[in-house]
Amino acid sequence: MRARELGRKSVVVGDRVGLVGDTSGAAGALARIVRIAERRSVLRRTAEDDATTAEGRLERVVVANADQLVIVSALADPPPRTGFIDRCLVAAYDAGIEPLLCLTKADLAGPEQVLGYYTELELPYVLVRPDSDLDALRALLSGRVSVMVGHSGVGKSTLVNRLVPEAARAVGVVSAIGRGRHTSTSAVALRLPPAPGVDGDPGWIIDTPGVRSFGLAHVSAESLLHGFADLVEATVDCPPNCPHTADAADCALDAGVAAGKADPRRLASYRRLLSSRSGEGDPRGEADQRNPGDPLAGS
Ligand SMILES: Nc1nc2c(ncn2[C@@H]2O[C@H](COP(=O)(O)OP(=O)(O)OP(=O)(O)O)[C@@H](O)[C@H]2O)c(=O)[nH]1
Ligand SMILES: [Mg+2]
Image 1 (tube, rainbow, N blue to C red):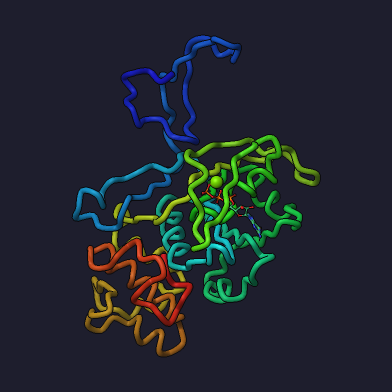
Image 2 (image 1 turned 120 degrees about the horizontal axis):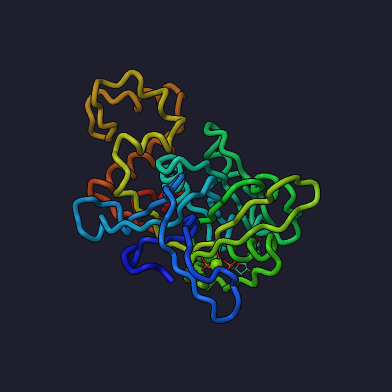
């Protein structure tokens, strides 16, 4: 039980708490959470991007104290969305959490397109298929608290069940239109079992419910750029306080792209985020209507 003075939404998955009462765990035992330790990291998302509306500002803490954000994206069914991955990278940077890209359903499609988009970032990644061995992933998870985020139906719970066989997380089906059905409804932290060849603490994995979007209203426009480390170099020639938007006079990003210093798709993604934060775009654009030429770009 939570002590009443802590408030309704005060404790989130990943929190380290102080307990008083009967901590035996026996049937009928009752203990109270009386204190929440200072958080090492806080992963947040907002319902929408727009900080000028009440709905946009509605902020949720996804988890506390995570060290690693495992961005789970299926290579097909549902198709990958680099716009969504880009948002997660911004959120990870903002929270001080290291990102890891986990590409599932590698038995259904190849990773070339997605990985090609991130070549400049040197983003760590793992590929998962139903029969793949998970040693590389286990090594990356060991000793840390990792939280998985991704759209519904990408295979988060399937993966958790493979990593933690006794987890018994319910697994859903993907509908004909390529969307999951929001099978998982709450976040759960699970202790990873000891793995052969991995010494020490195997770490923790947190499974979360699928999200439709990852709103970033809580991230300042300046901080958005940190999620796009491959664009930073091209901004050194920008005028002071350059907003980097498409209509900004003398923004050096356009010249940087023209000179081959940055990928035009990455610049387009960054600018989509900038404009959706100012309330111009549709942050939940699924197959992004403004990008008919790039089927992966949606968020
Ligand atoms: N072909 C293939 N199917 C997979 C793979 N991983 C998961 N699936 C299937 O994808 C469907 C959805 O998997 P879940 O694990 O429920 O997805 P989830 O990300 O937990 O979804 P939510 O809880 O709704 O967020 C299930 O039918 C799985 O069997 C994979 O690597 N290859
Ligand atoms: Mg699930």
